[in-house]
Every structure is written in C-alpha cells, then in structure tokens.
Image 1 (tube, rainbow, N blue to C red):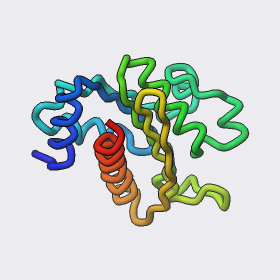
Image 2: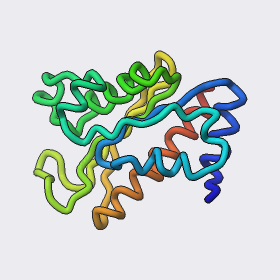
Image 3: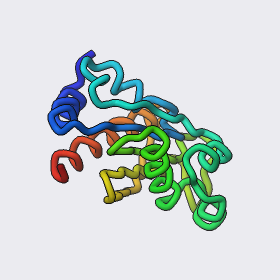
Image 4: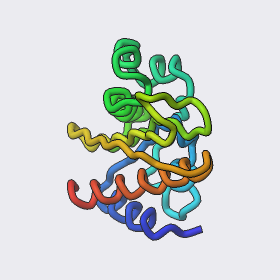
Length: 160
C-alpha cells in the first residue's frame, strides 16, 4: 500500500539523512503501521513505542508524573515530553507523539472523547496542536493517524 504523503516524507527524510521515531498512546501503533506499509520506510524510520499506560510514558519516555497530575495525560506538556523522549530513546532526529481519548468512554468535561494532542520534535524545535475529533473509536484513531502523518510531512517540508 503506497501512501503519497509517506512516500514524499520518505524521500524528504532520506535525502537529508534524517530519522523518525513515534511515541503513540491513543493511536496504538497505527502511525508506525502506516509508515511501515510503504516501501522505503527502513531508510528513515527508527521505530515506535506504544506507551498506553502512564508508567510506560514515565519510565521509557521521561514524561514527568507532575505534568500528568497537573495537566492530565492528554495534554500538550505530556505530548511534547513523549516526542522528546522517543527521540532520545530511539536516537532519532524527529519524533512524533500522540496522546488522547479515542472513546467511547474515558472522556470528561475537561478532556472530552475525541481530544488528541499531537507533538512533533525536529531537532531542538517542538510543535504541538490539539485536535477535537468525532466519530467511533476507530474513526477517531484513523483521523488522528492521518493528521499525525500530515503534521510530520508539513512540518518537515517547511522546517527542513
């Protein structure tokens, strides 16, 4: 399966000799799966951490317990820490992270179902944005995955 966004991303990162890693919570590895379904990914993709539980985010990715307690696990600081942490852990130049609530349960007034934070680290620069998605659990995950891939491509195209 050839995804034009991933194909262009592969070309861009390969030409520049850069590597990518993913840290996924609510997307559960779907970004990594999408990347590895396209030929040429091995030239730039270092790997992925599916950090679904908070203790994995803390232990493997260096997310602080204080950030989780202060901001909730579905927050900009946690997403940023996950992206930075996966770069460190997997020795990548670029890291992307997702944290959110795909539903159908688990949401609150503060963080409703469909809230997804995506963070991207490129070298020393960190970018993050929040999505408010709707649909079934599968649809929220698919939308978050597509948005994450577009985020990687757009920011890499404009920043590299």
